[in-house]
Length: 311
Image 1 (cartoon, one colour):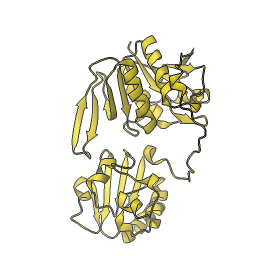
Image 2 (spheres, helix red, strand yellow):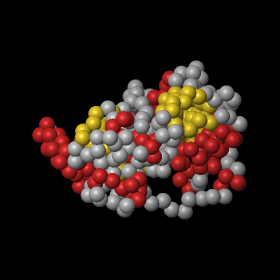
Image 3 (cartoon, helix red, strand yellow):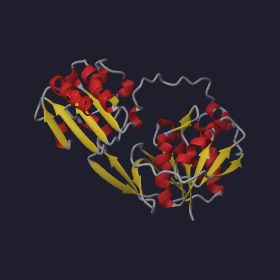
């Protein structure tokens, strides 16, 4: 059976949900081998469909840039004759993937939302207006996958473990991480991993309270359009769009957002889209599965109350 490597993500002993998604995609292709640089994450891997775990020894990956991580994956891909290496499509993941592709002289595909057993990927590009199917034709396929693109397949037990000590070049160690400060998080889920996202735009006029209240009633993350973040109404870390974050939740609620192509690029792949806007001609309605023509300040409080009544 073909071997597929996945790079494990997580912090403080908590494995990221995106790791489970990578494992689920990898299971379609062959035997799933999870590569772990942080031993505290090993226990959390039993929840996912992983066959083997490789624990990397020899250096602290948290102190180095993606360069040594890429070198380690390249050595493992060669040793295990891996058919593919799957990485989460984050800024760090894309850098690791690019470096790995160069080291292994392989093709690389980024921001995929699907990959099948034949390693044919699906990408949503040009603001979601075009769907692309692609495959790597040379070397070991290096693919980065967007979060929330697949339902996670549960694991059936503890995977087998082995250790690996890579040979890291001096050049790969030239850049080191001197400190890390995790972003301060509230009680809401992480935007890129949330199953429900409620976003506000220009129509909020800077008042996100109804958006936040509705999001909290659903246990959702809060997003914002570029117009809202540029106006200083909401932090740029919550911007959804081509120059912000890309989300693919089960439910996306756009509140007072016109639906410019820049915003659509960041949420086009959401499974179900609901739009609330006073303008019946707003472009967002062309994309929405359900639309409400009305003032969000009237609609959202009623929706929040209705959700609360069902609890």
